[in-house]
Amino acid sequence: MNRVRFAPSPTGFLHIGGARTYIFNWLFARSTGGRMVLRIDDTDAERSSEESLRSIIEGLEWLELHWDEQRYQSKRKRIHLEAAEALLAKGSAYRDFTPESTVENTKTQASSRTAWLCNPGMREISREESDRRTSAGDPFVLRFRVPRERGDGVLFKDLIFKKQFRKFADIEDFALVRSNGDPTYHLASTVDDCDLGITHVIRGQDHLSNTYKHILIFEALGRGLPRFGHLPLLLGPDGSKLSKRKHGPVVSVTNYRDKGFLPCAFVNYLSLLGWSPKDNREVLSVDELISFFKTDGVLRTNAVVQFDESSGQKWADPKALWLNAQHLRSIPVEQLLPHVETEFKRSGWWKPEYEAGRRDWLIAVVDALRSRFTLITDFSLRGKAYFDDAFNLQEKAASNIDKEGAREGLRELGKRLDAVDNFSEESVETTLRSLAEERGVKPGLLINGARAALTGQSVGPSVFKVFTLIGRERVLERLTGL
RNA sequence: GGCGCUAUCGUCUAAGGGUUAGGACAGGGCCCUCUCAAGGCUCAGAUCGGGGUUCGAAUCCCCGUAGCGCUACCA
View 1: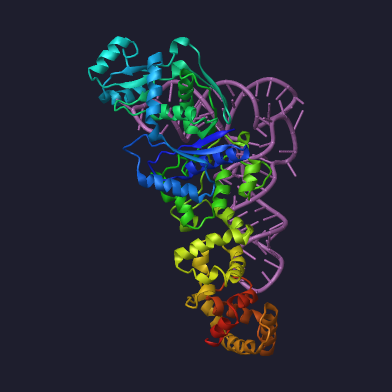
View 2: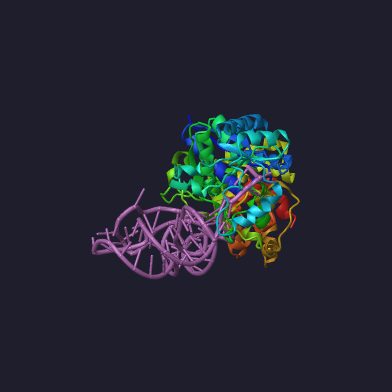
């Protein structure tokens, strides 16, 4: 059975690049009957925080794509260090006693003519001397001994980037254990992938060149290799890798939740970055994504997430917004309702009777409104008149009531509707149209005026629908009170 | 600097030797209409540059260029 993992490090909020990696892993797992492991890569104690961890879990939970197992890398330190011991014993790793202060020099060296491969003299230290210096308390970093004497290199076939090869001569002796005794990412990640039985490592392309190192560790450990698949990166509108610091809250997953995105729409949007079902379909449910997803359909080119922070209208990619609107109007209302409920509880509009007695009414209102909304928050922002008598009359709407003959006509309409036995879309329309004819005005005058009087807005659903949604009693109040 | 990866409309993408280079978002216009959306129709808009290979190249090869990644005792 396939086992995949998503391994965020809790050193920041979950950003959309991470979410996309999670989604692709999840889609792969679900489409192949595999399992999804969430592994928290918290080996960097100084930079990891509880708050980041919470935010990541929160973001992932919101996606509604659930994982099957959860692990913490920090709890597995012993296993990592045992592996390090084994590598040292085998001669696949060696202790490097170069003082940490020279790290800066190493970095500047890296930008000079030749690439840095190892610190001078350290590979050659005998095991006896190495042990002696260790017992004497000399600090060291444990490095992998890249078998450069073998001459060839590491070859693997990436699920997405296909054949990849790198000469040993181009791989530096990377660190496995820091001088403070903590395993590095390379060691911990690889050992965990072995130990947790991960069969497919699907991650960002920024790890493509790390993969050679990981394969070296797998082989030195005598373990079988998982398959690797590297995803193209997500870039900001300026072409640089997406980052919170540079691009702001638009990269944070919880931001999309808070602004009113539907998880299924967000997942749909992200899945279309670097992948497509190749048949021109764009609006896809999670089930459809599962059935169409294949790693060999994934592109190798980075995708730009389009947004303009300076414009309030374009805080997110317009296509993401469009997809959300599409999902908003096409998913079953029952599926939409919980999100509206969450939104109303947040805005304080939720009433207990929506649970049962007024549930059908709520469904009818939501259904009538949703085709002209983009985000779930629009229900609070633009739907007030349906749920509360204290709504504002917009300027444009007010002008529709102030039009010549409108106010009187609407009051009269109120009186006539009071006398109507059967209050329905049809009866209201008949009454309104005949009244307009009698008074010699265009029906539009009363129609637009009624919308304004009933909803406070100049835009909205079909006005006759609005009459029945608002209900006879409140309609009469709002018309006669003009 | 070294080592890689990538390159189709503004953006997301389709076309993996033969198409008027297709679709979607965004933009323009028209239709529908009680408003606003939705929907329908429509316009504009791309193969990074240069060389090969081939009867034929967006597609294969090479060279440039650009972008990105890695080059940490970060992940």
